[in-house]
Length: 381
Ligand code: NZQ
Ligand code: ZN
Image: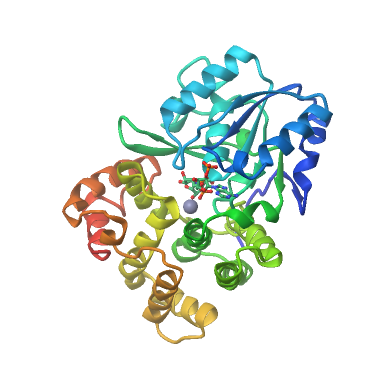
């Protein structure tokens, strides 16, 4: 076990109907007026918008509505949000939706306190101030509800980059599994792929770690797979939605990587290029990248893959787990080849170039040059 600091400041309020307490949470935190950030229409359709608005009213917290966040949020809309937050003089951000809404909300929280353009904080400038962020999560997948990341696409330059700062951890996140029962099957599948991706990055790339961390990861993967199979059959199954939701949160809140050494997120790096260029859903892009990356990386660390096959699938051999995972992705109707996602194989060089730029920003460009990224993508043809 290597030395580490684990400090996750997010308060989680978990359970049925908990969104009703959001007004009180904001009031107790001293917030008087929030930018109420949401997506296209899911929270209006479900009635959640009205319930949250009623809770705010009851607690005397004012709000300014800012809807229309895209899945794969974009910089132009984020900038509009920053402008709105500044004009209205809000003292907090309330993001109600999936990972995209939470991420854009976090970015707005940074931009609202900054004198310069918010994009600088995605390309290396350190965040020194941000409005407090509060969330009500409606789609379990990204872990954004309990981490300090915010991913946004600059649609002009086709760069999908992230802010990473302790200042954008949500102060409070409400997790009501009931709210996720209306997530369509495709996004439920993508959420499962994403949660699995979050834990396997550290599991396979770490230079050293412990059995505890390995077992946490294997347990999260097995739980995500089992509950997803129930959710696919019974979308309204509360217990499965609840267990899945907490599993997805734990998958990227710092728990599974604490005490690891020298790990990286190459699958995410490559996927962000697919989302940036083709606007493919993040989990769908990961389902294409992950089996390809695993086949490429397996040679570098076969014993990890043998363990993965044995512990997760009860199979022997380094390739067996990769094949089983890919088969499972197919079973939940996630795409596993570039063509399944409508991505032409002829674009591989261009995608690899986009990915290599992010590799430089993430400090992993020695292992992931354009050539290696192209080799990985060729395994997804
Ligand atoms: O826009 P609305 O109408 O709300 O519809 C959304 C959207 O179309 C819909 N939806 C959400 N909750 C729903 C629902 N539909 C019915 N019922 C509900 N309860 O689902 C669609 C997808 O939502 P989105 O927020 O885009 O999905 P997800 O949560 O998977 O977020 C994906 C984004 O998060 C980023 C991804 O790159 C992507 O941009 N990530 C964020 C991370 C983080 N902050 O730590 C880490 C991840 O690796 C990832 O990169
Ligand atoms: Zn992810």
